[in-house]
Image 1 (spheres, one colour):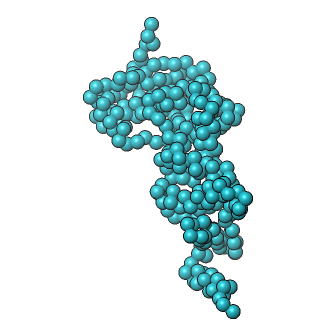
Image 2: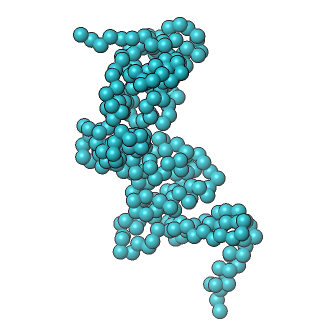
Image 3: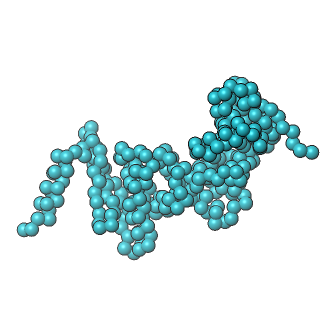
Length: 285
């Protein structure tokens, strides 16, 4: 006998009852989904579970179907039509937080692929919520059908998500190759250098952030290829003075090395003093 489909008012569904594995919605596919629902209706009901206690009007938590629920709410706001005021849903029993999170991940893996960062992030949040004892357990529990190689990559993405929390503007936009390069650099001890470069920069858009840290990633990769000649990671040297701070950071380039001066004392007059001192040190006798 097929599962019964319930028609649930939108206000009775809490989309935040579980920490979502999706950090954002791609506008173009979302608009296509909304247009499809407006024209043909919802083809696949969402999945909900009863809350332990009501949260305002909400009586159910969202298990799967975040994009579909968001589409219904957008359409109802735009049209005020009664057909979008409630949504078809399967009612599931919440056996455990771990099982609910695993079901959510499985549904999103099948329907719309998550970014590498988002896959790692849900393992971190599941561990932090107490659903699993460790990130390793979370990866195994959330991705039980993944190969050993894929679970290794997922653990690396979880490490990236934990180490770079709040540092990157749009980490979900990172490709698997980009995310893997950052994770390997973090493992190699370049995390402080990467974080300092991001923190000291006024550029916050994803493209500029990537351009900023890519030379650091290249330095870490060069050190990995030639460990016997590798120097210590270019750890930032922070010079503290009363009420002011100056950070001097080295960076490997194709032609050699460059120094980056950031902070409140990083001014034109200071640069003149630095260049004067360098000329004095290396001027012919």
